[in-house]
Image (cartoon, rainbow, N blue to C red; front, side, top):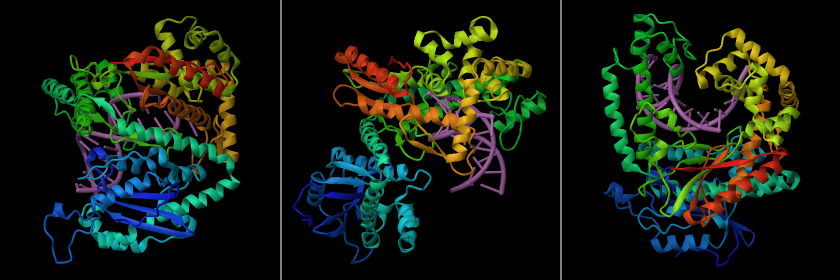
Length: 589
DNA sequence: TGAAGGTGCAA
DNA sequence: TATTGCACCTTCA
């Protein structure tokens, strides 16, 4: 059995080595290392449990190629012992998921969320937001630790094994394996020292750690997805695409499309590509080709939509789903400049609205393939007009604030002021103006935004006129944009609603400072909302989509549950931002 | 075969 | 001077 002190409540830094990067791609524990202080000594140890994987390779090469992995009993002993300590990880989100899945052969998954008290990666991100938060990079920066010996020793093995740490023999990695747990413990201790002086950072770290707990639970859960149906609908989409291709008078690739549209048909390019400045065949450009009655344009646009849906959703999601038929995104919590989370592996923060897949007639749209747990329902909660309300507050725009207090319609009123009425199209343009001009955009970008979202083409003079009139109507926004830019320039950061600092890199453009305040403040709020409503019995948060939350609620508690979540969000947001905020809900089905 | 570019999705 | 984020496909070195 392993030699572990028979005590509880020790601060233990823990690190896992694994066979991959995501549980649904088969990642499991291959080794566990720990570091702690006991009786004034720093003790560290590393235990292999599935290292070298002799049974995978199948053949022992020499008398010394023995299986030096620890036993199943020792695995259980270690996990139970960890369950009695106070744990620290450098990215708890990852290790907790791995430990919750357990060993490749033995299982013994254990949820250690409540035992986890600190995350050195999250803390490091809050303390030094512009530096790398990698463990080795941070150690090198703080203490001049050099990892060269380790790199040199492991490189040939990793190269041979496709970067699989778990396939490197234990006699090679073993000596280095406990290093990360040791570094994590030392980093924790140094962070505690720093926070004694910068104690105002602690609440921000605690919020991030709370979020990590919820994000970890969200990843344990995943979200129900109808994998079989996804494949069936995907096949129907493929058949549909083949039919479409028959009607396209050129091989349906971007290069051939470009040739056909702009050389053979001599169409007028609507816009050019970013880097190479070629005539573009993107959706907005093809829309202009359709208006020019260029043959093949309509069908090419349809093809692009269908192909994107197949690759990203119907096939992509089906391939990424876990064995339990649930989709698990890989949440990235730190590192975004916006303070937002991001969704990786499968991007569940960019699910198409049904109107995007209207070209796929008779095929179930991607959102229709998500499934609630039997006895539960899926609901989405969002903050209505969050950016406009928060921006009005920080710009000090009384006109807007009063509208929100009175419950009047912002876009209609802007439309009336700009165009004399709130007819559908005018209101749409006014809405785009309100969305984009609060951040100080110019006529060109405004015009593009209007065209993208409404299909309405404005003449340059018209766009310029609207922008100028809008700025005169709501002068608080141009002013606050200039002010925010100056603050960012002078201090190197702007403050968000909760006091979190959003730093700018030296070379970073500062004109986006006001945008950063609004986006960042909303992100910080939604973190609190998410953490506050997450509960395994009454309302499980499954997704966070920047200003909205997708939540699973028991059928018999839907009425109280949805009301409670909305009231909680509305009240907390109104208090948080000091302007009337409210949340809306709609069922996902 | 990997990087870069283009495209499309979300907020 | 809108901003930010991610995945898939094609092209090209």
